[in-house]
Length: 281
Length: 260
Figure 1 (cartoon, rainbow over the protein chains, first blue to last red):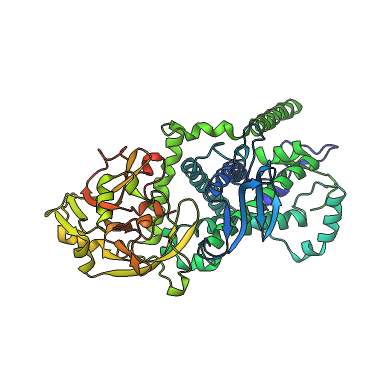
Figure 2 (spheres, rainbow over the protein chains, first blue to last red; figure 1 turned 120 degrees about the vertical axis):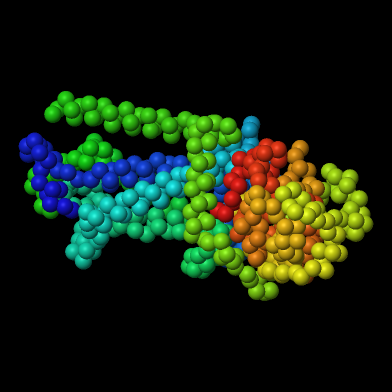
């Protein structure tokens, strides 16, 4: 945090409810909303692309004459008519109505992820790719912008968990479990750990595993595909990282709602955040 | 102060409501992006140029696609797209009936000398064999061994004119209601791994995989690697070819460079 973050915003007198501080810099706010838009478009277009071949494998190639699949979504003729199925690590699940076969009995649609989860809602790999790659650039651009500004303003320090954070992690976990969210100047240990993992690990993993699927990049940066252990493994990791990202977004939104949506949304739009007066740093 | 906070609250409320509305309406909201001539889609398609430029910059002209060991060939090459042009082309059916003994590859367009090669002539030329991974735009990959004539050899014999920019590959197969075709620029055409392949996994190229001749463009997706090629035409633009985007799938909304 910079020094200016530690003083109350000009004109904001401390009141009974707490004091307003400057929480988020402009670049943090801009990149946050760029990520929101990018992820909102990337996930449904990614599912559209996945639907073109809804099987994930381990290694360089896809096993058609051998089995190296870890996830397969499909439709088949069951005893009681067509059914959708999902095979995860060899475990077959009946997912009729959601994965593999959706649309109900009147308009059955044999598609891996249902149209309500893809962009476009109909099968259109070409459009899925066009939109996916555009917003991939938005995601990468926003991350680059944020990283540069975070290095410059030393904002990254606010996200790196310290030894003290690790020590107070159990207490923070208990507080979260009890839905107690005190408003401090700094992030709580759990917040630091989460935001650091998402920005420092998950987003780079998503970008690099995406690049590792490019046959052109494979020629230019052979180390990248070796890092992931093959093109099909990279595709599997890309998908798994998307699931983690979707999970993060879900929990993040729920936490915002629970911890004071007005104050938190304001802080990510105007930059100002009200903290508890008695709260320490 | 309180008035400002109130208006911010209203703003936030409006934002949340419209966000929820967008979610509830489902992804039909963005179906307009599927319209091939929609201005927003055109705008988003602009990112393909950026992607191509970034890849050309990072990859470099001469970088080679990875070549694999024989032990990595664990299955046949999965056929995709057209698998039997005998059903749609009488000319092709006649060639296939005589095991392509009458086949001719024509190199034409912006060249100093138009060239024609029979399959036997191509097979007598110095060959290149490479075991590479084939990456389909759908997402799957397979590894196979390809044998053929480097395209650079053929183009050098025909001698491209200075204004030639693209090599266009014209094919026998009718997919839907249009003939398949593809193109690449001359840099990629002269890449050492770009070959006109007549052999696969140590045998003659099967019909399902593009007999008698298909292009291997190893740093691109599968749809760039035309099968059943009869003509290589050097051009300076894509005007007058298909819908003018440089390839069968490009005409249907896919990107031309296809490196990702």
